[in-house]
Image 1 (cartoon, rainbow, N blue to C red):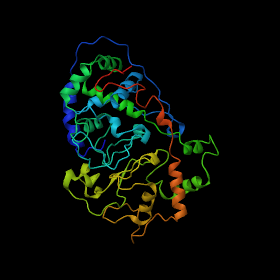
Image 2: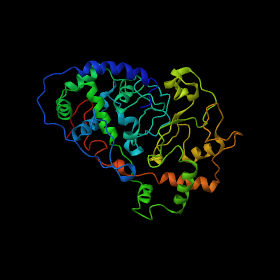
Image 3: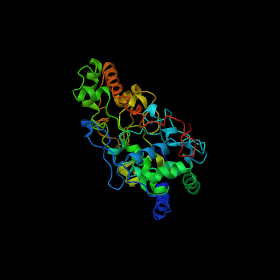
Image 4: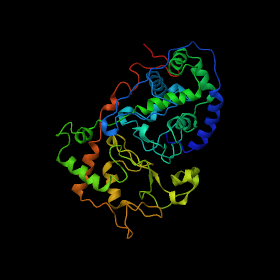
Length: 367
């Protein structure tokens, strides 16, 4: 999900999707898919957002899960969505920059996948507006999965397990639009809202947070919550947080951040605010993975930033002094609180890899 060529691939695959939407072949009729109400805690609103054009169904989520963990979708047969988005790492990959089918490292750090249903922009620069269109960039980019459209569809249509799964989920044979819809349904179910912080804030467990963590929570509310708005812990917006002073135009202007999409000079160096859910699992940090630890991130905001014309005023005042002033003890308490945003909910078998190994490029599970 960090393809620098995201707009190009979304446009190219989107044209193919429009053509394929009209493609049909004879399939046995299946009963309508089963709508499901995915569990969402009250502090996230109690309901999972889902577009009317692609409602959450049991069959759609199951198909999306199978596709997500299938390396057979890639050109090499070795790279799945889950290769770079590992459940045990909060659906991140633990590396500074992932390496895909081309063997070249990506230009940006792989973002964690969490609470995607509440977002309205994807990639670090917001280059995709919804999860359905976002799918195309990593799937077809040579530097990520590098899939070939014709080969991908031939694989899916030639596999009885996938043919049946698409029939049950969408009442049709495999096609690119339904690949995108199934993956989007599954990714919307990656909900995180059951950490010790959540049990504290919902009043479920008065002992959920220790003394240092409660102190860290107060510091967080004072210094960080303007951008990392609880309880999604993101504002969904784009900010220059003082990582760089120079933003080169090479490599399709990936260093420009949001300005690469909007073309506005005022957006240069601004990147999407990531959620802090499961942040202790998703190191390294920032859009380029430059910080190895949460302590390094906090130290950056304490005064390690650099100034540039679009630097967010919440980072530094007019005189360049840091807005976030923390003692060493404060910084340690803040990190302790951030670690309390970790949870085990993503170990739910409904969102993890199938229990049995899937044969690459097939819809069947090996016995």
